[in-house]
Length: 353
Image (cartoon, rainbow, N blue to C red; front, side, top):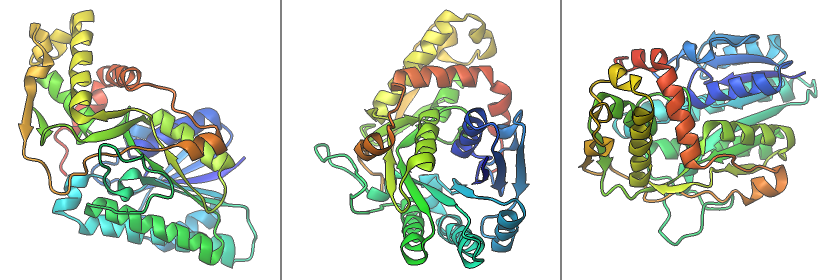
């Protein structure tokens, strides 16, 4: 039995991880530390037994120390982060505070409780990062590997790169047992509706425009969040301390292709279930029209990386990791979840930022 502290787990990926871990490791204790900023939602954790939500800031080092000591925490899984690139462009300060200073706060507390106290407690600090730290790829460039030089192009990715370096430094300088995973673009249940897939899905249901940056040919590797959680589990169980593992979905697609898949899947859902037209009368699909008519092209955003792709050879070879879903399969599951959980996402549409 282990005691986990999971930061940021009222958010998208962290909440999915807690659901996954509770299912696969039912005897472990889970404490969630989340500041409940705009993207944090306690409803993401409803129905989970043995999960204790503490509302607090990862920058509050004494609070983290108290939790580690009083709850005999042996594993930190660190998801808490500001993660929306557009928000980082207009307000970078919050990204530096949460992603860099907050990560350092956790590392300091972990070092003090796990190393400096002399307990010799077996431990693991796992840091969840992003492929965006590697910068942008050209059309023919090889995919990002764990040895790709860092070249972040947005305040968000720069802040995540800084946190990655701090985690590495605490392992090499102090001997903290750390691992880091860099993932590709996640999608799935509980994703806040500012992100591309839930935003465009919900816009299709409401007959709202689907704004596409630039020419829509920016390429991303798409990873279903449950596949990501499986990858993190494998790192926690078998990853070598001090190592980084890239976790990808093996689904490299241009944004325009993703949007076309969203539109086509929504149209098929309406054709198969006539009740959807009554629930969402403003959807083009409710009138027998194509959701793709909502597409519109807008000015590209600043610093928009052209292509990301993940080489997950190391995770496959060392951990036996492999994604289980194609994008079409994963998005069909995701659409079904959002259609079944309108009561979850509708209150978020008017939530203040």
